[in-house]
Image: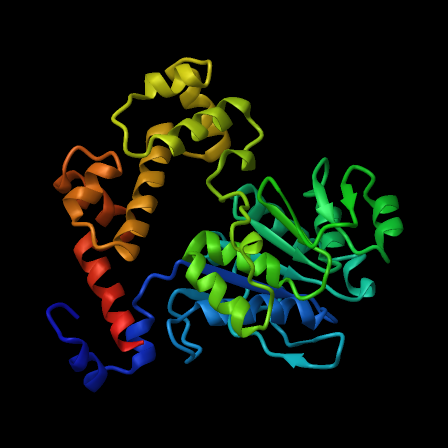
Amino acid sequence: MKNVSVHAYEETLDPEEFFSSISPDMRVAFILINKFTLAPVSGLVESLRFAADKSFRSLQIYCKWDWMTYHNIPVTASCGLTIQPSIHFNLQNLKENYDYIVLAGGLLSETREPPQELLNALNEIHAAKIPIIALCSACFVLGKAGILDNRKCAVHFTIRDEFVERFPKAIALVDKTYVEDQGIFTCPGGTAIDLASDLIRQHCGNIRAQKGLEYLLMNTDNSLLIKNIPDIDKPNIYENITVSRAITYMSENLGAHVTLREVAEYANTNPRQLHRAFVANTNEPPANYWRRLRLEYARKLLANTSANVTTIAIDCGFSDASHFILWFKKQYGETPFSYRKRRHEVEKIN
């Protein structure tokens, strides 16, 4: 695909094949439970659809999603619509290839006593620090898995009493459209469009989030557009105070040439203890985590600005462009030049 014009792509390659080569900004897996409620699922996926391409061709470019069931057979929504899974349920795939796992519930008869294999899978996903979104009564499934213990969660007022009785360790709230607590999102129902727009804003930017809100005829005043929710890499997804303080300092100093000793001092610890805390809470050393934050920031600059690669490298804390290019390719499998070129080609075609 190197050194080939966009027009050549259009003539020789199926557009969906070309677009599939673009790394999306947001990847979502929907796990549908039988008798799930359609409204929040459709609100979430329709928002993703509008954000997924520049025009309105419903191409999965910037956002991608898949449909699955834990038992790999079709399920029926509470309204009677039958959904066929688009991909096989695979735990390793879920842990490696998605930014969010959406668990869609509905009728309590299907979520009060979920199968143990689903609970085991959710606990493994949670242990891998993949954010989980529970729609409607899927909060009962997360509660049964023990994932909501000592966490705030949004539940529908009609099921609050039963939920509290079953899961007294969870902190149930009935006045929120959704709640995020340490990487676990709960949404009691409705359309889930506000949740979707916030996630899209975080991963794809304000323009794509607003596009969906406008075409879904939702309120798009400034107060909605400037709402902030925690990034998956922000410190409040980790319970360890040392790690939280360190990530705060890292996030505020992405372009600064400061040492890990300075990070440790800010977190009121020493480099050795900082290393241990990071490995225990994030499964990687602090240096790797910090570099990943910088690379993700650089990728956003490549996609959304015209700054040259050297400038971006320096602004993101790398000593020079060659050092930045080396790590970018290791992280994303392509050079910054290739990434930017392909993103711009997508914009032209799209």
